Length: 167
Image (cartoon, rainbow, N blue to C red):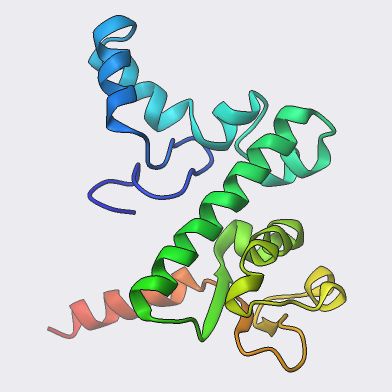
């Protein structure tokens, strides 16, 4: 995310990064500011691309071409974000998949990693398919670690609350 949650990769209902010229065109010819905001925040992302749902589990269960398209766009955009970060960092030591999609979707992890093979990313398909949280899914002998990690947002929030109360 950038200044707002709209920047970056598409999410369940948020558009992700969009060409600013497209937004200006929509405002000039089709939409009000309020309707554009609603569309970008609540009617875009996986839900908008698929026309079905923003839930990856539902899209993976669907045979609709629109569901396949939404998942392919998502994997592409995640991979391009990782590629950009690898460029900024001068390489890649590890990729960590976490939170809802990262922890629970072996097919998304596989699709993202397949696009990053040129950076040394390779996963063990069987380990990926069976992976639980806090597991390495990298193929043996690869230079880039690939890890599925439980988010533990509740622990982070509890630590922050404890630190705040200690002041």
